[in-house]
Amino acid sequence: MMQVLFYYMAAVTVVSSVLTVTLKQPVYNVLALLTMFFHVAGLYVLLNAEFLAVVQIIVYAGAILVLYLFVLMLLNLRSDARHMHRQWPFAVLILGSVAAMLVGAFAGGGFGGEIGQYSTAYIDSLGGDTQAIGLTLYTDYLLPFEVASLVLLVAMVGAIVLTKKGLVDDQVED
Amino acid sequence: MIELSNYVILSAIIFFIGVLGVVTRRSIIVILLSIELMLNAVNINFVAFSHYLQSITGQVFVFFTLTVAAAEVAVGLALIVAIYRNRKTVNVEELDIMKW
Image (cartoon, rainbow over the protein chains, first blue to last red):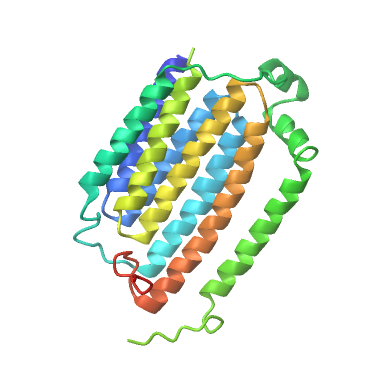
């Protein structure tokens, strides 16, 4: 059952990623990416990361993609006759061969490392995935957490400064 | 049982699809979407390793990746709006003002 679900999620994720890159209309690209985000959230559920699955849907699908659609509607772009670069077959060839090499290397497995203490039973004893992440985030990673909030503040101020008329010189008149 | 390598392979494939989008597409918006694809590929790796090596750190790092992705999208889209306002295009082949 788990395997069937994994292969379904993996297949839809790959197909919708390809559609995100190849479709012509930007709105369709964004909607394909939405499908991809939902199925990645499904993969997180398979990996017992329920909190991240929900955050993935709320932040990526709820906030980021809405922002993309908002800007798309705002710009009102005309669709281009030629939406790919002229040399795209070469890019497919080169990146495809590098990807095939990597997949061949990864297929052998042999990924290992130190096994940590956060087994499924231990996470359950803490009260669940959300509690386990919260306990780690607010103790061991408190400083990065505060830095992340600073990053968000800077991004917010930056976005306002960049889009406000008159703050940055827009002297290009043609 | 699903192997860890299945997740790593899936993540590699999605990452390369993202790279392909960045190098071949001509619209800045689709290039930003492809960067989102790459960030998601990295997140899948983080969560998969976190699960199989039984360490919660990977999931905490996905949390930070999400934060940076949100900041990147806000600033990136603001830049796109500013570029469109000045140049009336979002096609990267026409944005060659800094080209030698």
